[in-house]
Picture 1 (cartoon, rainbow, N blue to C red):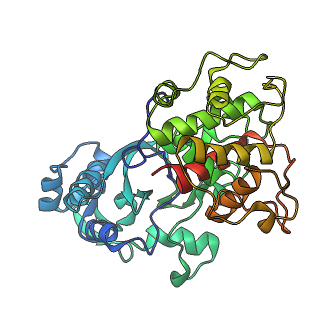
Picture 2 (cartoon, one colour):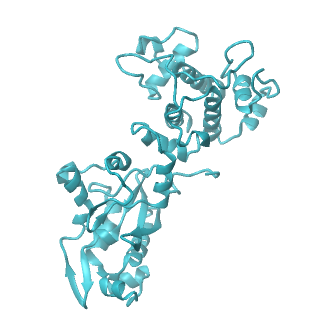
Picture 3 (cartoon, rainbow, N blue to C red):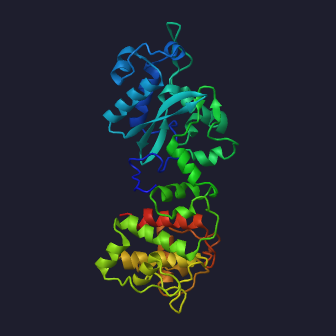
Length: 376
């Protein structure tokens, strides 16, 4: 996770969706065309010897394929309609298997044309189990009890699978496995310990490298002020495409005047940029806990001091929540953050200004700020 991750090129960023009824037609058509017109070559599979060409053209010509051939043809057709897709290999029921993950409408979807096809070539004869493609979405009806018109465009896999003891090997039906790419499994392991409500946005925060890796697996732990400073600095660097050293040089910040109780470059930069004044007496309190009001106040100062944004046209925090202090800068920051969706408070018109943040809260705040305010 040392290199920048581009969500349009790598498949574990935002990979919360599987192919389901209702996906956009330009991704459904190639899949249905393959599922309905290609026959799975059981004879070759059982004999462990391919009897036909498994290239995209060979499969199209011979209409016979094992999973590798289905993948080759699927990739070719998706590429032809300008859909970015990658081949994923794994194991299903002790057998090597291959499938596709395709980037459609700003998210990665799981696409398995082998299991979508119910056409079989066996003992030299062609046959069809059921109408092609039905089993691709059968698990939605079978497990969630949904009718066809209720099929969701997206399914939060992690939340749905949390009810099962071993979600990565759970099989909905004989012909329809829920399988995960190595990227999905890696991301899931990084989110161990995170609350279900936080995982959708933490996925993106982790993928964009907005957070310290020391937070991974420790999501429910209270965030120290120093970890919060690192997250805010990473947010600034990812959003601007510049290092804090470059920003400091451009803006003339003094990076040689740290707080008296920490020489962290993150805290020093926030001090130099006017984002944090610490807790007084030139102290930052690096091991102290970090509150909701501190986080949103700092995000507001990042908006104005680093990115030159004007927060004066937004409601005040005191107009939105009943427990926000009327402090200069803080009141404006809370109102701005609420207006653009960085925070919704804790309910009943409360912001919970002094609430102590956990690592997962920092991740959600960081991603929302990136997506809604700073990424452009």
